[in-house]
Length: 239
Image (cartoon, rainbow, N blue to C red):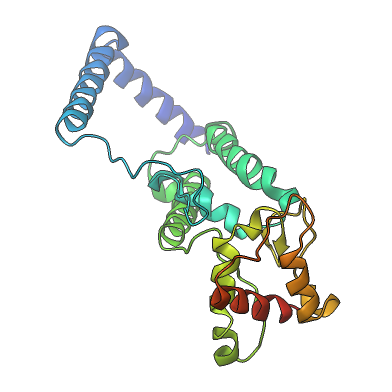
């Protein structure tokens, strides 16, 4: 910034400051009044509309799909993008914290006196990029499938791969992903990864394992025959 422009800015700033009103009580009264109005509106909405409550939680259900509130959809989608378990802390704490700190420190590394948006490229770029990223992740997270969905493709032929969807659903509904990992979905333990189970064990061996499992794996001997057949077909195709 040129010295002449700086002097003109400081002179204008001093004149406006001298002609202005003190922070107390004018600014505090305005902010306090607006905060009171917002609080009254929120209280009225909660009393009139009530809280949105879903069905009672069932701890025995394996088909329940947990979903965050809409304002956390961007973080929910970030977890879907960064799938490796060792990077979960980075997705949940690291990236949001770094972005928040950078926005908080924005006035310290963008110290230009200009207030017009066109002359504040750093501030405007940071704001626009942040809004676009959060909006995109929120929209994708809002229309995304359940987190228990298995993304692995067992065949390059879409028609053939579609025939394994029933087996995928049985895996999800049976809670297999709570102990096993298939591709990048599920947990890495205590059970072994099933990504290439079909290449390690033949179909009869997989069936024997389902009928006579090792604790704490549950017994699938009483599973519906159609579901069991779909499950075996899908697992044996994982190579």
